[in-house]
Image 1 (tube, rainbow, N blue to C red):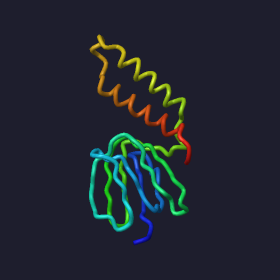
Image 2: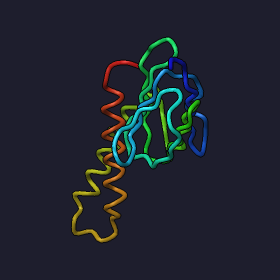
Image 3: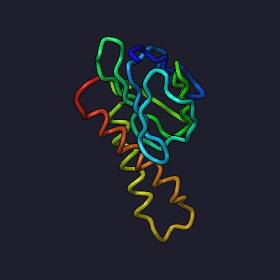
Length: 138
């Protein structure tokens, strides 16, 4: 059945996306998933990656998310993300600086004050943000 679905992507600080979409694709913890109007309801956790969707004009849009939760309903998709930013809002220099800091932390193997899990997650976030910012599209 043709139709649009409401998409809302929110973080603790702000609403990042609040619009209608033809289709929504998101990075679920168990793999990427897609949602069209009249989808069976479900809830899942998200991993670091990109939510991409086709807006009502058919334009592909991309939003970086660093984990969180997604709820799909027949008429809407709600994403509660730890952090999120539209591709055009990514500060690529800031992402590159974060990547370099994370790499330096991970290189300090003998330093027991380094939280390697946090540094690895920071590196993964920075890499995804850079890849998304450098890709074509909106």
